[in-house]
Length: 640
Image (cartoon, rainbow, N blue to C red):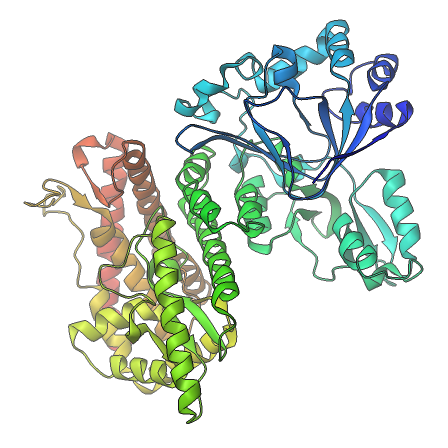
């Protein structure tokens, strides 16, 4: 789609520049001189604004509204530099200063408006304002200004950017760049729009009759709810406000803010200190502290219309995990983020599939089990998925149609997931197998049979499927199935004992003298299986105790937290188990990332000799906690 340009007033551009870094410390006269001859560019989403290695940017771009993603694609198709920039950010500077073609591609992720600064005037401005150039270079580094972007494919961005601030150590309150504007809920829409324009803000809160904050309005609401629907501008702002306030504590980290934005699919959070809303933080505010974010990847997934691109986006997860590890994120936070992104990839694939083969003949939901169901995926864990659909009355034609539809859906989805990098389940627990795409009544019969049988195969199946979670589609079906499972569990009390017995079956790999017990032969000789010997016993323990006490959560840390809160397990023991689990998951993540960097398929076997003394000491402590956990379980199992 063609770009649309218009001349803009010098004073308007200069005033905007004066409010953003790195122009803020420049004198007004210089900014007005720079603003002469500026244009206004509108780029509807999706648009490619600049293409790498093809063109010299025609302008320096300053984003007035909207957002873009910036990346470089290598000859083999890998993206080696990814960034997200929003309101007040620049792009095109490096190519203009180096007088070369753009080393990067710039694409919109939403409708974007830019001020377009004249190249010659910009170069003159840089010469007259060395402070501007110093600030800019300090942020982006000389290496990024020159034409050396081609070297970035072998060097992590975090090693090149001197401003790389660890998101886990930056509080959300410290990322706030503006106070939040507030309007009464009866204020007309046109008055609210005028206020937002005057304050140059993209978000306002709405105040109720008692003075409390009852809603939120962002720019997007005006586009989607007012302009698109031709709503009367005299209607009160309450008509379009979002009543569920996206709030985060000022003491929470920016990483927590990103997790919440990713989960809730929002771009702004209200920052709360005590009971008071003190400001608003946006994705772009946090991007000033970090060059890559799960929110960036989430936006790309949610707006993607090319299934091939989903394969590429999925391949970015290991790099994102590395960024989060380097940023100081906990393993629990990382696995939550990875699970959210995996969910969105699956959801987008299913959206494409429904567009291809048509809507389902009956309501259904895609469910995930195992580590995916617990939201504990690391890098590339095996697929564990199934299809649950509504029971059909004895209409054999509809039954036949449903079976044929879900067979096609299951088979093609598994193929797409493999291309996204998710390995096939070795045990065949996938929706491509007829056993695992059944109506509600069959699923209830499965669980009834598993919970009344003590054979090893039934216990294996029930442990995997007890952790099931709705991923896409009719969520009420999954909720009904979970209610049935827990009701059956109350009827068959001995089943809790079976779960507890199973949780104590795998002994930690420590000898009498507290030496590590490693694999004696095979492919992983002299290595420790972190998953089987360390992580699985804790997962099994939390599942058994949660099932006994009717805790519906599937995530291990959430289960342990609820067990501690309810005093179902001694507080000290529960805290020790949570710390041990966090350490084991973190060690596993680091190990798998090293394997990915070595282009080796990730696995769970670590060489104790390769661990530091501190890691060895902590690992032995974690295994000791598991010993104590299993001793507690053996002592109290009769009470289950």
